[in-house]
Length: 298
Image (cartoon, rainbow, N blue to C red; front, side, top):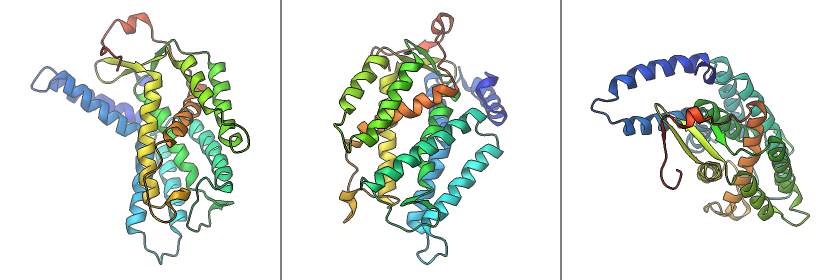
C-alpha cells in the first residue's frame, strides 16, 4: 500500500484508516463508509483540476477589470503556483509530473492548431501566450493528466483483459492525428470509436475504495470522466475563459457532441499514464476477496 501513496498521502491514509476502522461495524454501515471514501478519494485525485476550475470561476466573478495584470496571465501564474506547490508538498509523484508535462505539451500543441482554424477562441489579451493561446490553457490539459495519473494510483487500479500496450499507443496516436487531420481529410472518429470497443470492450478496471474492490467496464469509466470534463467545460466557457464560435454573442451550452472529443482525449491521456505506470493485472487471489459487483458490472 505504501507505494501507492506519497509520504504526505500515506500519513493521511493511515489516520483515515484508524478513524474509519472505529466507525465500521458500529452505527455507520460499511456501504456508507465506502461511498464517502470514494467521494473523498475522487476529490483528492481532482485536486489540480478542482483548484484550476475554482480559480477560473473566481477570476470571472471577482477579477478587477482595471488590474495591471491581465486575467489570463494571473491564471497562468496561479496555475504555475499550484503545480509547483503540489510538487513541493509531495502531493504528486515524479511519474505523475512526467505525465503532466507531456500532456501539457501535447495539449498546448493542439490548442495552437485549433485556435488557428477557428475551433474556439480566447477573447482576452495575455502577455504569457504562444501565438493566440494563453499559457494557462496548457494547465487545463495537465489537470486531466494529473487526475488520471492520481486516480490510477490512489484507487490501485487493476485490469483484466487489458489490450497490448503497443496497440493502445497506436490507437492514441491515430486519435491525436485525427484531431488535426479531420480539418482537411475525412473524419475517422467513428472508426476510432470502433477500435476502442475492439481493444477495450472486454477490459474491466478494478479499484479499491476502503475495504473492498469494485469493478466496472473500462469503456464506461472513460465515458464518465469525459462527462465530468464536459461539465467543467461548460463552466469554463460560462466564465469566458475560452469561447466556441456559437458562444460569441452570448453563452450557450457546449454541444453534447463534444463528449465524443473528450472521450477520445481520454484515450490519449490514459495511454500516456500507462506508459509511466504500466497496467497491473488483476490476480485471482485479489479477485476472490472483497469484490462487490452489480449485475451490470458497475
